[in-house]
Image (cartoon, rainbow, N blue to C red):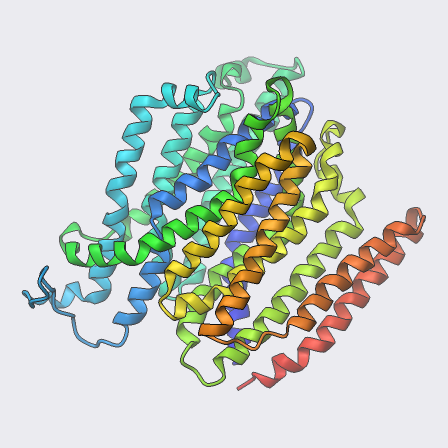
Length: 514
């Protein structure tokens, strides 16, 4: 089996859970944005609070997922347990056979995240009201508390889930994620579609009155997520490591490696979520939540690209580490980039050529004024995917600080442009900021990487794929067609693009077949 096909298979399986999870959440958008569930201002509260989730989750996981993969790859070459080392480097009592390097690493990483996450959750329990006031969400203290519990549990389960990926067990990984998602979807349909919608429509009954509390409002979104996250934790408990195998010296080494990755991840999350966090505070209070809700809902329409990027990252990170020493690995990485961009731009065309159909996933027309951000955000996410793809060079050369530096540059660009553009352009300023930031990061990473770990990316082909898709979409927008003729012609355009790129890349796929 070729390296590319192996990556595709892993990406497909890991992506099964990730894509289904996010796609099902995407399918919840019609529910959240229904006239009888949440208005734009209420959905803006959900959008803003979940934006904080991404930032805090990066802090609590401290770059340990990538660190775990890197240290596991180093230990893989040892057939016997590695000795412990004291602070001065002296050898200590060897681990027992049941506490080999893999077990020690797993225990150290898991418990190293568990205790900070527990402290974070206790902090939320003690100060949720004050935190809610500080975020200007005075009436949502219970939602803030539940959100902090969700973030804490996510951090606790990060390494057990990463271990499944490291062990090459994508099906179990997918099953656990899908179980959690299933609980989320089932409870959402019951409490939001059945109970909340009927109550708001004046069709309540004795059963709804007994199980539904209208005062909780948007808090149901967080309560449902908390339950589904707790289910994932319960399923993973049987595989929880022993605290006795934890190694403090190893923890310090992992923390030293993970700290720059955490900074890079935090800066990356600033780039990804700062627009929705800051938007609330740069617009007048009387319509800030509504604007945020509109922007957050339309942001979801870029989901096809973000879903693929997430699935790709799940399969690609361990793939890159395990294939880095193979002959012609850099040529393989370059081919992967071509295929990656081709798939992303195909997804761009799918959404943009049929946006007038996709928009009805947001059934309330009050949200539709924000559709103009969709092409900008989709292109921004393509550049983000390119940057993630390129990040292999500084991870394989043990230069995690490079990722931190590039992400910090991106964060500086993001913050500066958000403050410059949002007051005058509103959420359009946020969308343009996102595109400029991610494009800048991709260019910086490419130029820097070619000096330290040259990968022969076909820049011309990549740019042609991107420009070709944008031009095809723009051209279709200039032709006034309606009905079957419109959708038929756009389908032909989409198929032609896919056919051209597939013909270009199929030779590359065949050339890597073993």
